[in-house]
Image (tube, rainbow, N blue to C red; front, top):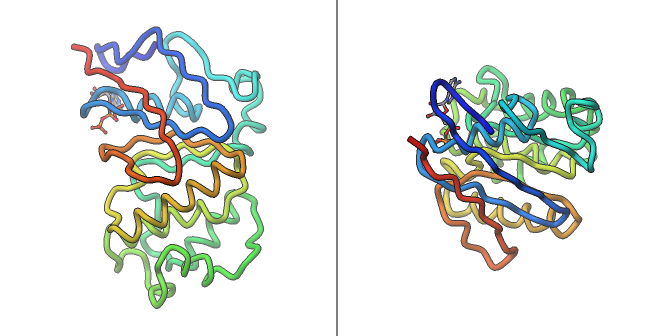
Length: 199
Ligand SMILES: Nc1ncnc2c1ncn2[C@@H]1O[C@H](COP(=O)(O)OP(=O)(O)OP(=O)(O)O)[C@@H](O)[C@H]1O
């Protein structure tokens, strides 16, 4: 159960996410989708109920949970004064992962050729989102929680993301995301959880 302000967002909610599954949380503005993602990511505590990762409540071993989680919030989470390359190096350092391929090659995968050395603040919203999403090519975390990852992406960016999701799912990863768009792809089957706006 989650209450924010005076309003009950949801109660009696159960969600089990298995390896290879992608779940889309859908519902109108204010229904509680981002709040649910934040609860699942351990960033917000529900009034009742708990979240477990591989049967262990996340509150009991946050370190293990965070080693297995990649969370990307609805804001791009890009450092404006850093270039795309520097942002990538920053993510790698924060996530404690080694760059197994040159950062230029990772940025090429997200369609940022020629824009690698420009401070992010000089890039468009979609280009900044691509920098943020480059984390998906760096991480080894099996669980991805992504708030509106498709926002501001063009058709090519959306296709890149679907391809990366499909790779992750077929490697046994799991994804929980929000999106106001219907995820139309032949690459994987999306499971949906709908939240209603409760007055
Ligand atoms: N930081 C906050 N502090 C207090 N209440 C909040 C906060 N963020 C959201 N809320 C409340 O929680 C409700 C649900 O917000 P949430 O962002 O989870 O909805 P959402 O379904 O993701 O909406 P949207 O589709 O607009 O992104 C909001 O109506 C608001 O009342």
